[in-house]
Every structure is written in structure tokens, then in C-alpha cells.
Image (cartoon, rainbow, N blue to C red; front, side, top):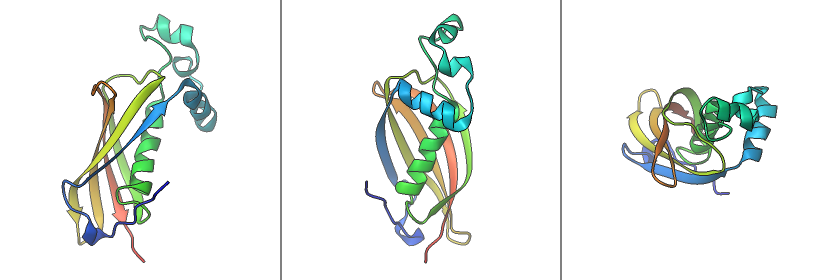
Length: 141
């Protein structure tokens, strides 16, 4: 896996990075164990279906973890330190599903070394599942 190493001066407003990930039911099981969130909406297919969903729903912060991946590996990469995250969930992520995570730099502060990245989560049919606004400090050696 390649990890970008952008400096603040190499970043531009409008710059984008993206990756795809196949979210599988097993990923939701692992996230349940890691987070301790064992809500039946995430772990019990029958429960989720009784609530009107077609299957188990991925945790919202599973998507948040993918923002961490975007910041730490790609935009800005190794020099990035996630500072804050605001998310909005529009449609549930029901695995298995291919997810496209795309980040676009919305602003850069040379004075503070902070960038703001707008993140969109879409599925393979380009349906918007969630959005996020992440702020990252860019620290260089």
C-alpha cells in the first residue's frame, strides 16, 4: 500500500484522492468486536429486517474509520493528523457493498497548517450514502 507524503505547499484546494473498498458482513463483525457496539441493528439480520432494512447495517463510525484511512494514507498522507470529523449519514450501508470514498480539499490554512477535506461515500451505483468534513493538521519534519 502506497502512503502519500504531501507537504502543505504541495496541496491545493480542489485536489482529490479516492479509494474503493468492498465492505463485507465480516467487516461489520470485526468492527463490532473492536468498538464494542453490538447493537442488533448491526449484528442480527432478522432484527434489521424487522426494522425495515434489507439486512444488517454497517456502523456509522465504520465509515469514520475510512476517513481516518483517507487522511492518514492519501490526503495528506503520512504528514496528516486528523483533528476533527463531522459526518452526515444519508442512506444505510448494507454489506456486501462496494464503497467509493472520495476526499476533496475544501480549504487550506497556511498559517495554522490545517486543511479541510470534504468526503463523499458512494456505492457502485453512485448513490450517496454519507458525507463528512474532516480537518487535518499537516505536520512536516
